[in-house]
Image (cartoon, rainbow, N blue to C red; front, side, top):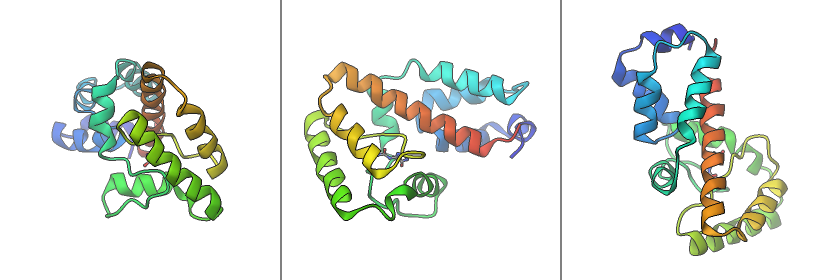
Length: 165
Ligand SMILES: NC(=O)NC1=NC(=O)NC1=O
C-alpha cells in the first residue's frame, strides 16, 4: 500500500495494519495517531522512536503473535503469513540444527519464562542457533533489551514491507 493510503485509512483499519507490524497496543495507537506522515522515513523514524520505550510488558503483549522459531505459524492471518515468510530459512534447515534450536527454545523459556524472539529474516538457521545460545547467557535486563530490539527490527521490516513510499 502507498503511504498516502495508510495516511488516509480510517483509524480502526490503520490500527489493524500496524498491529501486524508489532502487536503492542500503545505503540500501534501512537504510530496511527502520528498520521499523516510526510514520508516513509518520517513514519519509520517515529515507529523506531516509539519502540525505544519497550520493556517486558510490551514483549509479553507482542509475543502472542510470534510463533517459536522453527514452528510453522498456523492460519491465514497477516501475522502468520509474515512469520512464515520470515522463518522460511528454517524450511530446509539441517535437522540437527532444528533439533538444537528446539532444545534451545525450551531452555530459553525455562530461563526467561517467555518465547525466544529474534528477527529471523536474513539469518541462516546456524546464525539463529548461535544467537539463541549466546543470548541464553544474558542476564534478565540485557535479554529484555535484546529481545525488544529484535521485536523492533521485525516491526520495521514488516512496516517497510507493507508501505511503499
Ligand atoms: N519467535 C520468533 O522469533 N518468531 C519470529 N521471528 C521473526 O522474525 N518472525 C517470527 O515469527
